[in-house]
Image: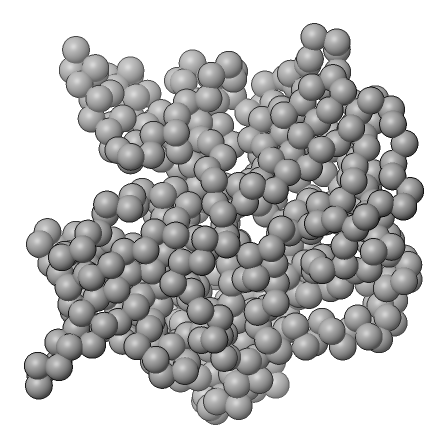
Length: 354
Length: 133
């Protein structure tokens, strides 16, 4: 009886009153004896024996989320595209689809967004919180050869053993392939491969081919994890809110221009490895930041995405981290204990581990 | 006792599970991390809309002049998944807000923490990791 009381109290704590679907237990998923979703249970199958990919998934793409061309040499990218990437970075990503409230286009497949797969025998749907959708036709029809360009493209799929292979074409050239700003043209072709490893985990590989911009196909490996006990919640970016992009006046070069000189012994205090913390401790995929001192300057690398030089704004706050700032917090001995990564949505806290 | 513990684990699991990664725009395009601002005022409007939630407070300075400040939070879904609802803060609430001011000098800022005067409750922004120590 006591336990029952506790159930009620904890359920109330865990469930925001007006938003129960956000933590509604997903029916029909395997659970361990303690009631937790068993994400390593076996792969579910449809009545016709195919792998069933249905469910709510979160993509995980630590290395390529920001820069899908991380493995390309500069000369493998057309000069005009390299210039465009520089311009987009100087503007701190103001033209990105997420800022302009446009559909994500092909980069939807490699970005860390929630997506829901609904699988039927002849058609697989992928649904996004921003109300864009993809139809992947499994009925054997050929891919469109000369379609009107669209945001999310035209897609057909087939099974190669237990792997779903999706081919897409007919994208407009309005979207970026990543947040670094890599462009594509209407010639882009995209191939996705999805293999569900077990109940809760999926391997994904996306290949972008746009020979008018990139000398070779860009292969982006990533993974996806099932999100049990929650739901896709509508988020229509273009509601307007009180946002006014006229206030977006900052440029990447402003941060360099306002840099100050910080003494090397102070910089040395900040060097080390930092791990992202949740309110409840490290999350399932905490991001990491490596901070190093080199030639009298501070550099930081976010989850293997490449080093960037930080621009000191004060003795503790450094700009130049993809448009975010890093503030180091020290103890009374002056040793760094953690850092705060400053976002519009709040500070993310990283604890120093070594 | 065992079952009680299991219940605690399940409930904690529910809390932690509903927290997907959200998209992040550049902070520095709009706000200046070197311009900290801390103001207390009365909420005049909560605009729970995409792409980012805003709220507005009337701030009275020592001369009695009132200025309306706009504060940007994360996305409604980010806030929802971090435990906020659109009723967490209401028009008429007196709040103290800390954040960073706009680059262009207008009376808008990014809210890092919001403290309700009536309860002392410290609300945090959408990142859910947002509680500054």
